[in-house]
Image 1 (cartoon, rainbow, N blue to C red):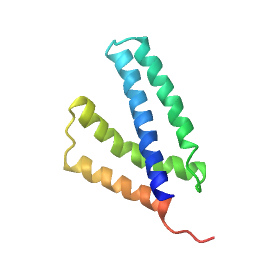
Image 2: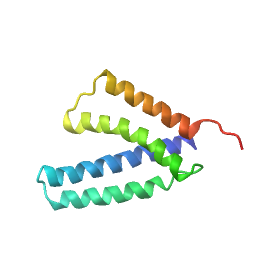
Image 3: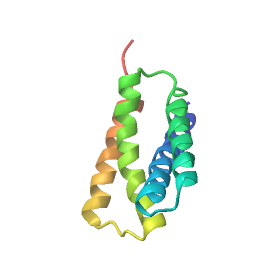
Length: 110
C-alpha cells in the first residue's frame, strides 16, 4: 500500500509540475498553444491521480503532496532547466519529504 501511494505521489508530481512547465513554455517561451493545451491536460490528469490515494482524507493527501511538489520541483528544475539546488534547497526538500512521511505513513490509532 505504501509503495502504491509513493508511486501515485510521483506520478502526480510529474503531471502537475510537467503540466505547469508546459504552460510556462507555451506562454512565457512562446512555444505556442499546443504546449499550453498539453499542460492543461497534464494538470487535469494530476487532479485525477490525486483521487487514487486511498486511506487518507483529501486534506491530508493534498498537504502531503505539497512536500512532494516542493522536492519534485527542484528535481524538475535541475533536469529540465539546468537549475542547481544548493545544500539549503536539498535540506529543505528533505524536511518536506520527512513531513510527507509523517502525514501519510505514521501509525494512527483507530
